[in-house]
Length: 163
Image (cartoon, rainbow, N blue to C red; front, top):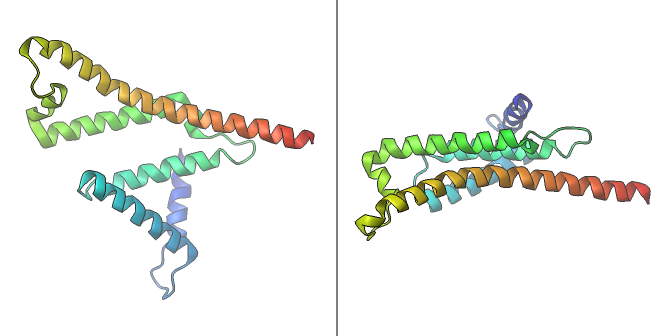
């Protein structure tokens, strides 16, 4: 994880364009990635306050996944503990942020509008399990996609080597 952090810092240092009139290729690439992520965040969330977190998370997962393509290297995201830990950490942060912003109104998310009073306990249980399962499924999906990709690369490279 520290290697990923240092690579991200180095990548952004190479993209720094303070004293030059013409932007470098690194600078143009980083600015276009930033603009794309910024437009997606504004469309989905409406606020740019979450942009630094989403931008950093994007680059962490991108660099961690790309490091797995180097022969005889290990990708951090092929560990189920890392991916599930990352997803539950983000879920905890989002829940705390939701409680801070919406106060007790945050819990109305777990009770759909127009629900009969007799069904409220059952629906709260179902919605809570659904809320927690989302984090688990996102972590497992990232892990499974990385393992499947690495397995496919191994199979294809073995076939090419035998030809």
